[in-house]
Image 1 (tube, rainbow, N blue to C red):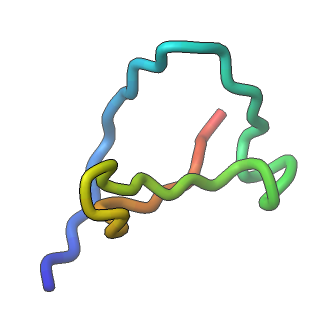
Image 2: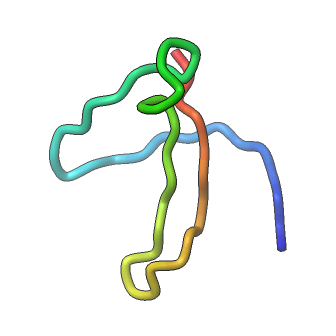
Amino acid sequence: MMSDIAQGSIGLSRPAFFDACAWNDATGALILRAEATNHTVAAGIIGG
């Protein structure tokens, strides 16, 4: 298992609504899953 800290950006094909994690931790976090396997490939928080 690998665990790193990084900063990045994600392009989406349609609009997504979110809050910064500091304002609302329920909508300020994300999980990315591989479409082919449905495995979790990343998790993070949204800063703002």
